[in-house]
Amino acid sequence: MSAKENISVRVVNTGLSKVSADALVIAVGKGEDGPVIVDAPLGNAAVATLKASLSALGVSGAADQVVRLPGLPESGAKVLVLLGIGAVKGAQPTEEALRRGAGAAIRQLSGLHHVVFSLPTTTVGQVAAIAEGAALGAYQYASLHTDLKGRREPVTKVTIHSTLAKDPELAAALERAAVLAQAVNATRTLVNEPPSKLYPATFAEAAKDLAKGRPVKVTVMDEKRLLKDGYGGIMGVGQGSSRPPRMVKVEYKSERAVANLAFVGKGITFDSGGISIKPGAGMVTMKCDMAGAAAVLNAVLAVAALALPVNVTGWLCIAENMPSGTAIRPSDVLTIFGGKTVEVLNTDAEGRLVMADGLVAASQEHPDVIIDVATLTGAQVVALGHRTAGVMGDEGVSAALKAAADRAGELVWPMPLPEELRPSLDSPVADLANIGERMGGMMTAAVFLQEFIGKGKDGQTIPWAHLDIAGPAFNEGAPYGYTPKQGTGMGVRTLLAYVEDVVARSL
Image 1: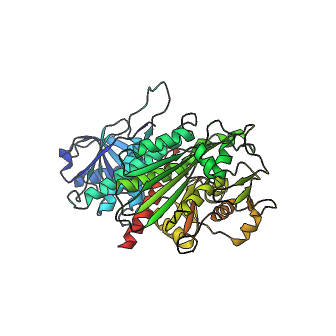
Image 2 (image 1 turned 60 degrees about the vertical axis):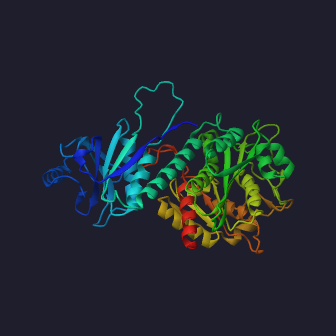
Image 3 (image 1 turned 180 degrees about the horizontal axis):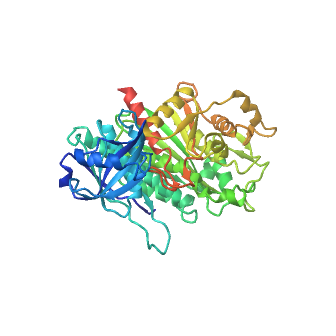
């Protein structure tokens, strides 16, 4: 894997004139009566001059707006940057507004080396949000272009000016921000890799490489093991490809564990649709169909890096869905790991087949909670758009995931699992079919997955939630905030925040 994301962050409370940098970034918000400069660390005369010039400069304070001006002698920076952070009504900006603003600035200031942020910060969380946003905004996929003329290198050094520079909680918060950004950026890179480079075997190798130096155990199940043990879903989906499937198990255990969690990720490295082949335009972004597995992998590694007191196991269900003389056909019946049979009515509904194997395998270890993450349905995009994921499952787990996503800055919305959808999955020849009611297809797919959640040691069904990230996992539009074009890393921050919340509730 290759990406450019090496950025250093420090926090100081010295005079800005003593910090030599390429750019100083200050905040401009959208006030009720127009743009307003928020807590600028400049002299009164400079602030008054800037305020009088905002409208003439076209500065609105809208989120993501970045306007460069010549630097001021009192700042020590060559360039003064006015950064839009969105609506402000007297209150401090949210952590997400600061995270997004820092990312937008760093992304748009590529080509510079050292950037100083002097944004309003009254909490350690706000400082960490700036650090996280900057590290996410600095991400660049090291593309395969042969002509790199005009390419601007990302910012490599960030200084945050804050009165909280000596706060005893700051070091841990910055460490978390760095670990989290590294995990998100690694996920982005996996998603961005072309399917000629990232296929089941190389994805498994990438998982082992990323895990090096972390207190985790990585087990790779190849096609022989999968066939022997009866992983019929993943083997069925992968049998049409010359690149056989893999199941990768990533385990982190803590001696102080307060919970046992399982994450299951969809890892279709390319989805042609199989025999039920997609139209050409529908295949263009299908290298991203492994984004759930990438998010699960890096979330587990982040939990391990932060030594959180939980046990968490990631199950990466990796296959390539291709049409060939050996591919599964509509009307074939597969036997999922654990014994349930599924009639395949559409080979393009393959993600739920590999996930079924992973959910059963995770259930057999009796975790306290199972969460799965998948780019599962086009219906998710129809229902919730390109930036908001859908969460379905047990109400308690879904609500906790929604709360974690809100805290992390990812957009997630709860959806129901209507009981009338289950009969549409009935099959005359198998336990169930892999497709059912078309309308509300995101929920129908989740109802299918629910069939493979097992029981815990107490005999009750294991609490579970499903996160459908089909839209927000891949950005086909222009970059925004800290989000680049292509792979976004969606899901990593929510999973980590969820684990932290589980720990916090145990205290």
